[in-house]
Every structure is written in C-alpha cells, then in structure tokens.
Image 1 (tube, rainbow, N blue to C red):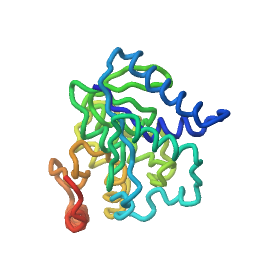
Image 2: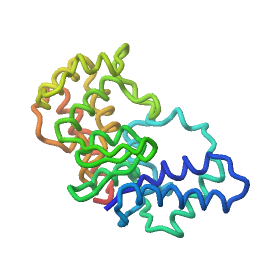
Image 3: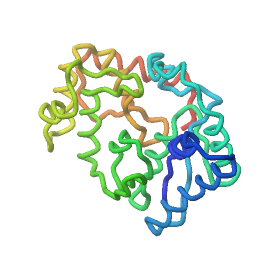
Length: 244
C-alpha cells in the first residue's frame, strides 16, 4: 500500500505553469501514475490536510507556521486539491496534518511517498518521488532524526531550534546509536527552556498514533519542570477533544 502526500502533489502540480486546467489535472494523474509504476504497487491512499479546523499545533503554539500567514495559495493548487478529493481515494485530515496521517498509517506493508524530509522520523519504507529513491528508516534512525531536528529547528514551519546549530553540528552533538534518553538529556539541557522544548517537540513530532503527540509518550525520565510542561500540554490536548 502506498501512502501518498496529497499536499505535496497538489502544490507541486499546482505551482507548475500549464496552459489550461485540464493540463493540470493530466499532470497530476501522470505524477500519481509514475509513483505507482515506479514501485509496482497499485493500492494507494492519498492524504490531504483539511482546512475546516485549525491544526492542533497552531492551538498549542500560535508561532507554528506563522511565517506563512501572508502566503497566497495559487488557485490551481486549490483546484488540484478538489480534483484529488473528487477523482481519487483521498482522505482529508482535519485537526491534524496529512503528514500525521502518513505517520500513523505507516506499517511494515506500506510505503510513505513524499518529498518532505520531516517524515524521515517515521520508521518503515519511504519513497522520494522526485529523486526516485526508495529507502527504509529504522526506529533508531527515526528518533535520531527527530532529536537532531529539535536542535536544528524547522525554518519552513517557523520552529526555532538552538541558535548556531545546523545539520552537521547536530550530527556531532547527537552521533548515531545513542539511546533516546541520552538524546533527550543532551537536547533538553541545550534548550535551557522547558516550555519551549515541549512546544517544539509537539510541533516537530510527526504522529505515529492518532492523537498521540510527543507529550503523550511516557518512555522517558523527565526533569520536574519538563514534566510540569508536559502535563499542561496533556491537559490542554484533552480539552480539545480531538478525534482519536
């Protein structure tokens, strides 16, 4: 089963210049067909981020993606999104993001198909349909990617990490094969800000179970201040009554 990132498909197709809307639809079909043919897998589900309700991350941290507030979506992108809903087996994800649905639907029998590097924290098979690279992520690799991302931050999503730390420095700070507790301890101490650490962790963590953010994971020994922040997030998340 292929898990396709409909957000990426819509933006990639809709921001390319074609002469008429039928060409946009045709190239969308071609893109999806090439993914299926390249992997010789024909069962697929497409996921799109919904627009009806705010994403929980924005409710937790209004700074999340605030850098995009003035971004004007091309009408062609919206038309492709509607085309995906009308003509494909597309699931619209409300309250969460399409990335999260890719994460919580990933199994040993699925392949996540996207160009978004953030999905590299999800264990299992992945396919980059631009580079045509099929690869696998282990649970250890996924956790390492996440904690390095906590150091680097995510400029595209307006999540600020630790000043002066880029990918190469993050690799030196968090070498391969550390335990998750070791990675947490190193990154948490560098933040020196429990609230921001927990907000960033919940913003950057791609869900692997529906409704389960980073704060819901009870597999770490947390300092008391961090635990207080986590408990506050859990109480707030409960109040949102998100679908699980």
